[in-house]
Length: 84
Image (cartoon, rainbow, N blue to C red; front, side, top):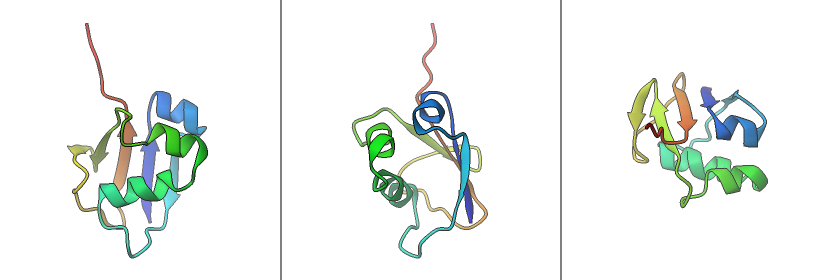
């Protein structure tokens, strides 16, 4: 089981701040998890699409799509932060 946390516009669009997911054996990295979530369709497909600016962190470390994930990990998805 992993914990997935959503921040900012993602939390609002998806209607949840976090969830527990049992990882299928085929999902081993962030790219696989994102594809699994996109396959839900609707807002998931729209908000996590490849052309949408979304960053991810594994156990509070900003990570890339090929970062390995495993049971017990916390994965966060969030929009890029802009300042000014």
